[in-house]
Image 1 (cartoon, helix red, strand yellow):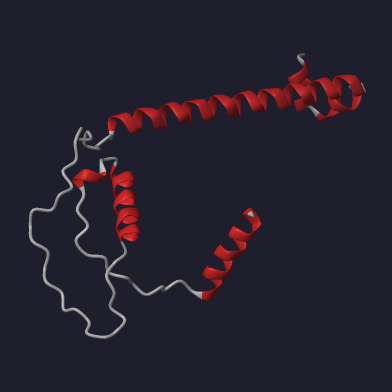
Image 2: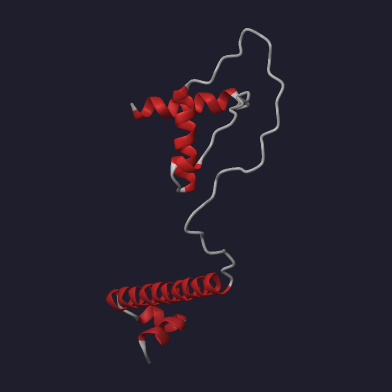
Length: 137
C-alpha cells in the first residue's frame, strides 16, 4: 500500500513509525498547497479572460477639449465686506490641479468662478487627518 492509502486506515496508522507519519503529513501538506495554487491560477486566468471579454471602456481620446463653450450663469454677488477677488495663486493652483487630473495642458482650461463650500467633515475626521499629518513629520 502507498503512504497515502495507509493514512486512510486507522489500524495501519498506529503501526507507522514517526518518520513515516511525518513524511506522509508533509506529502499531504504539499499536495494541499499545490491544489490551492492551481485553483488560484485558474481563478486568475478566468478573471483576466472575463475582464477582456467584458471590457466596455471606451478608448481615451488623444486630446481633451476642456473649454466650456456655453456662457457661465450669472451669480448674485454678495454685497458684504467679506467678498474679495480670488488671488491669482489660488486660480493657478486650481487650474494646475484640474489639468493634472485631466492629463491636459493648463492652456486648455479656463477657470471662470471659484465657489467656496463649507467644510462638512466631522470633527473626528479632521482630528484623524491632523494626526496622520503629524505622524509624517
